[in-house]
Length: 358
Image (cartoon, rainbow, N blue to C red):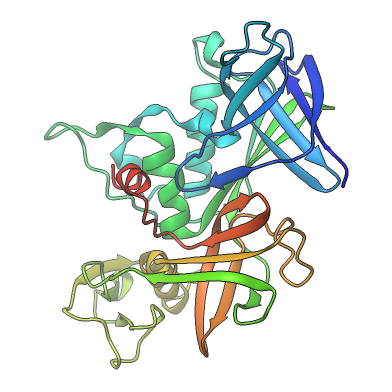
């Protein structure tokens, strides 16, 4: 097996040094940044906030250096480099205008927020060299239910990662991807709705070495949605129900109770029919519930059926387990002697639960 190539670059993409490692243990969780570390022969000049890229063939993992340690080795020949995923750069507070909710597209709002903090900041020392942000899709009518900190005001201070980027995936299936383009000295950020075809995984086949399926009780969330057509003086309405399998439609059967109802109004036009607007609102309201599960599947590295090293975050899957079908979304990955894929928006580790609910 070929070794992994380890490269370190400064924030302005200058090469600091490189080395090799034979084995890699790596964790990445979209919902809560995991820290990883490698121990290597010391690379002179490596510093916090440097970029690290670890690659082998089609595999590539990139992050931001968070700590450098030498342990008890007085000669400092060996070095432990800790790092977090590139998205950790956006783990920062921002001034959030609550009146912006529902105006324009959510993807563009996230892009503009990142640009304001890291591209167009009047404090040029805070701007990130080579950062490029692109909104790929448009999701309108968005609402994170963030309220102003002061009565009568319209601002609050929130964490960009925990309060905006992660909920964008949980509620609207909007994913942020980050990629280093060393050759062109760029950090490329793409923001867009999860798309593509659904992948079916048969978890009872021999290639799945271990599986774990957990469902969250969602009865406290909205499970009934009434949508009115404001252009028809509210005479026309459509009612959607959330079902026990976390699917939703207009059928009043097999519903989640007790009833938690929400109401919304849309304005139809020649360009946008009431049917399409209502369906969009229902999707925005219930999509978070669709992935309120935790599915962990462990398989051999490079498994030919699932191809775990090629599956991107945000991939929607249909997991078949014990004769049942579960829809979920890839949100985490652990690589060691085997590979564990983690699906869904539920976490059982206390530290991750606290961060997601903060």
